[in-house]
Length: 175
Image (cartoon, rainbow, N blue to C red; front, side, top):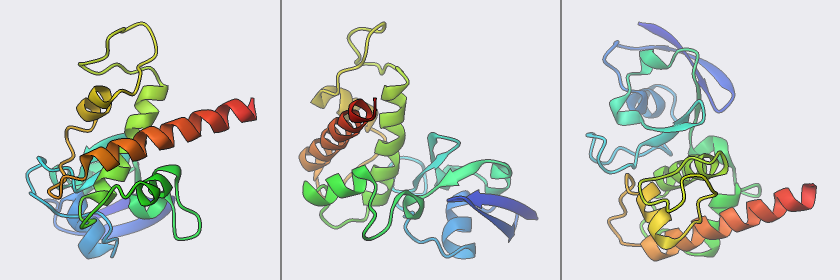
């Protein structure tokens, strides 16, 4: 089945079995190996990518379902010398150990920070009418779909909070 995928702003024609997951299309057909295959059951988050601004598990998504959807992978967030705010914060806060889960963590956190900026509450948000405060509990809940087997969670939380603060400071400076 031929599917046109828009990945990191570039259009790719993929000719694959209709049962091919987005994860396998990214890795095996397009050579974008930053997205990792962890559990292959949607439980670990290593395969997290951003689809039209929302985080998804690419191991549970068929590639043919993504025709016309803008997909962003870790490769589309930044590159050496021009890292995204979260990539930079992960490096500065040592938010990784083995690094296997890091691409999914960063993609998930990127979309999560956008959700917070849009006012989306989580199950632990205290005030549903106000801005969510990025407490440890709030970040842990929002990132609960992404596991780290090395247990770098405190550093991941610190990196997310730092990136959120820097992004907020940049928005204020621009206004």
